[in-house]
Length: 212
Image 1: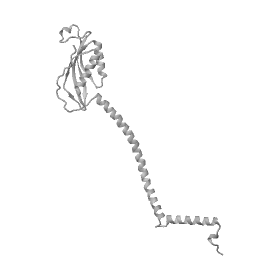
Image 2 (image 1 turned 45 degrees about the vertical axis):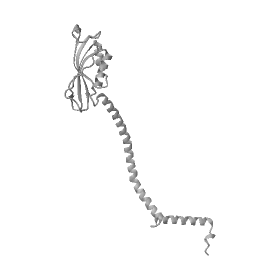
Image 3 (image 1 turned 120 degrees about the horizontal axis):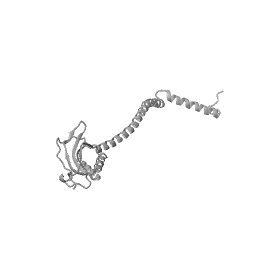
Image 4 (image 1 turned 135 degrees about the vertical axis):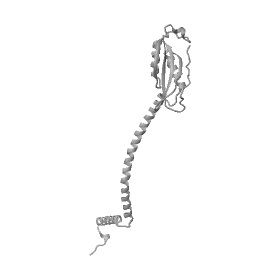
């Protein structure tokens, strides 16, 4: 004789409800047309799309790290460029350069008698700006002057150096020599710049201030 469902023991009723729930859920996942089956299909499509996106994100992480490295390199190169622009500026900056030479001479106790600009020489990547300089002073002061030129912020070459002792020549000069002056000389000081704009073929001679 069949027994009514409500007369079943409660453990059997619970097991029946659990089995029924599992069947309904399974049917929802696998029977076409049901909402759960549609959601399951969308989930699978999303998982398929997720894999290439994860690969793309992984590759972008590499570029992000590379970007930080490149930014660091760019910062270092910008600092290096700023230093190089100080050493070899774009413009001639003649007035500033002459003041630097005059300051080095005054600090060394050397008198600049003449500083004449010579024609600019064009090179492949830069321009040479030479000056013919006449100076005198004590021998060791002249040596200190050349040493100070080597420590200036701009690149400077000294060439065509012709030094001679003053001896009894003080009476033949057009200016009064400072006490202790023992040598005089004429030499060429060359500095450099990079910008080609308005680079004259022949520079106008310019004399430095004469100390008396």
